[in-house]
Image (tube, rainbow, N blue to C red):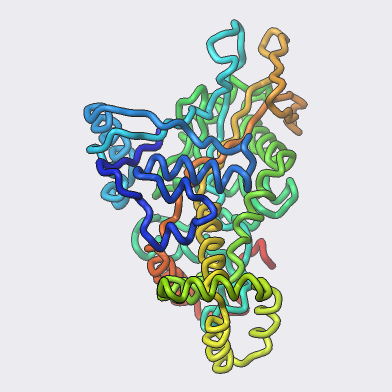
Length: 430
């Protein structure tokens, strides 16, 4: 359940945000966080990621007692350093109800002998290396090392993780089943809070921010997987990892997610320049720049990249200023809007829910609306579905924070190594 609410009836978006999302007037009229998230999911993310993979939820009315109980439950499950931000507004009455995607609802509880479901929840993170020419020379390491890998060093320095994750999003988004499998194996070795496994909706693995998987956790998972796998003991986890890799590869959802992430064509270093211009425009300037943008050519990242790539560092800084001055209001708006949409795609969750096609007695339970995957190690067939979660609206006012965090991440990574920037590469990107 996704709960955010407000008492008043004022639009939740600021005036600048209503301009930013002007193609979606319903979002501009939203008066609660829940309504905003519902509209953002249905009007922005569903067309990009597929309606079948995005649950926009249902708006429901709740009482304060229920909200307080949910808040206590949610906060208790968060790491200590996240609990303050995890607290919900319990004074409102409107919430967004999201279905439990760890089951197949059209058959659950209706059929005898139905096999159990197994679900894996992933936080994919940013799946490519940025190539934007607006990246400054001192931050050139961003073109060689994944954002996730660099962020791990900052979290380690801050004490938020006890060890660096072996996971690379570049493997997960590699476009081939072996790369996906490699990423899954690494996630199981150092899950942090980036992977969780559920059996019949109950968590059986993952969820810890600070530690890698222990022998006890691995043994428990291996035992629990017997409910959905015909693999012999000791081979169930490897088989499950192969199965999930196969399902993700066949579904092509990672390709779609990556394409949305790539809407960030100018990196935060370019987007922050567009943001400053966008919020600095007066209402009087809007009309003339909007009119000018209708007749001027659209912004082409390839042209910007080619131009800036030929310049020295000093010339590039001047080029950045010239570039931002050349942007119309509409072009600035588009850069910022696309950056925020991409930010949603970089920070979402992905759930893959699977159920054996046959039960222990050999009875088949097909589901026309679900896809079919085969475990490469056992030949066992499963129906499966993929769902995107946590597709939150990224707020315009956080742009300066994103820019500041980006610099913190880069500085933390550079501080941990004395190698030249060109040599600070992910293993998977070399």
